[in-house]
Length: 228
Image (cartoon, rainbow, N blue to C red; front, side, top):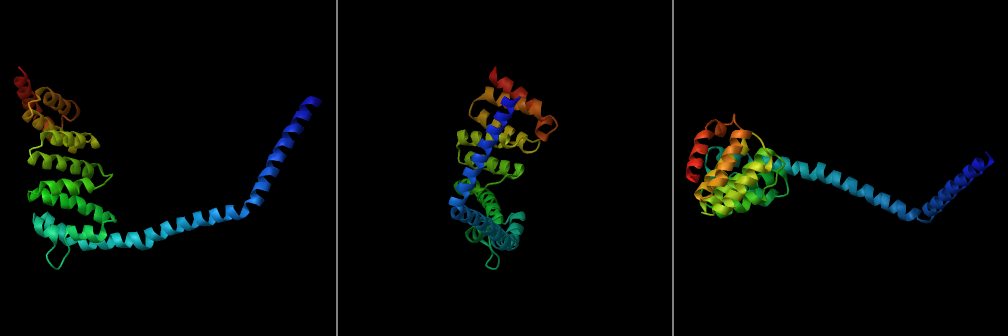
């Protein structure tokens, strides 16, 4: 029993010694510790202040400035949507003035789609690649539209690559079957009938109730025929 008590006393002494060393360290480095704490706190307040008093208001302004460009986009007036009408800003102006905001980021997406529709496919790729989003629909559409641009440029390999990226980006019953179908068609043009059949079958298995899934049997039959 005495041995246990002595062991406990020894452990207590070690703890007290460790605490003493910690206290000595704090006393010795108190100025540095305080400085680090103050700097950390200042950084937190700067980030909060930037977001609340600069970033968020600027983003709100950008969205307000962009409404006319979005209207022109909705009416297929793509040149006006891109460049503005002399009174209201276009998407390119939004990017120039508000590129660091959420609205500016969205303008990259709109700009890419505008260029795709007016036949400037390399510009479409450039702007769509700069668009970043966690939204599963927007991010998948951006990748798929890059695939469309490469298809228009006659670059089958890159178009297939981006269609498959779009279908796998965030699997869902809306965009995934659309881009699987586009990839399969492109593969047929590339004479890769085995891979196109594989994608058609994937649509049938995973997305049977989609628009593409409902009519997929005829494409499967065609691909099987091409393999014979």
